[in-house]
Image (cartoon, rainbow, N blue to C red; front, side, top):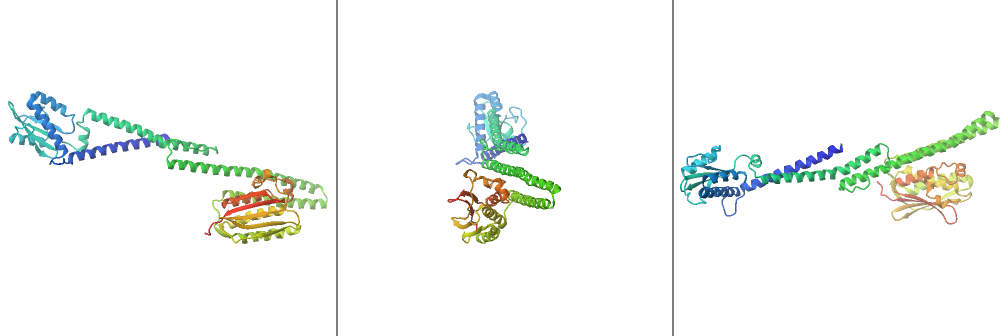
Length: 462
């Protein structure tokens, strides 16, 4: 297919070159035929034909008819104008068949030669025909007629000297070579993009166009860059989904295994054992439901085409999240407070931001010490809104701070399980914040505990 494109480009360029050459030849010919010489009332074409007639006159006067015949035969290669010489009896010197216009001009000159004694005597005729009387001492008066006959195409193709066709051939060869180079210059990067596209479609998610060294037009480079960006995005999505499926499959094994054990105990146990087993099955079922709901939420955030355009008041949103979280933490003496607030607004998805803040605050509430307070601060930092959530828990090892935002990653699997976590909350928060052009980072706070900082660019309301 690319070979056909290459040859189509080449043929188009070559034909365009030929058309340009013919157009330039036509323009040059028209100018030559119509442009008048300054100071004279004749065109350049008429001056050229007068020169041919003068040369013919000299040949006939000085060298006779035989030399003139040779000159007339050679003059056919001098250009499109043709020279005819008529004897006093009206016959053409080379015996050629002539047009009626040429014959009438020759007859007129022979009937009224005028002042033909001067070697460069006067010429007369029309725009494309010049006639002159040629008088010799011993043979009488002759008539020489120079005529430009036929249309432009016939004059272009006929009666051209050898050097003209050599130049035309050289020009055509050069245009062919340049056409081949230009076609290769255009088709080569497209072939590279097509090869990468085919490899990517066949399942090679690492296929990239990369840097184009030949054929670096802005459009082609932009196309290659867009393809690489698309391929990178699709690969990230596919890898994310693969990891999600793998992690969900792995995480489902534990609650399902515990449910299976509870079922076995319920079959063989007494009434109390059956009641405890059913409670365990219910707990594990709730855990599975929560895990699947969060997995679906994470998948939705990964693949959503665009976020909603809600006018979000961040302080009111945080107050709502904190109110619900504080109510849940009251049983263990844990509190959540909005320690610092600023009225800030941005345009985004209210639901996604609520989910992000809720997951971060609930995570802090789950790990903070009993009787302690989770402090939430909302402040402005330049063009960004900054939300800082600080707990008083055990913190996270420094080497694992960046990984806690990965799906299903747990620094302490047993403790996370006992707290009811699935390892997806912070991953959901990270993705939701990223979709709003923000960032989320965690660090171990001075004096103990974990501090999570969310930065969101403030956008004007839609």
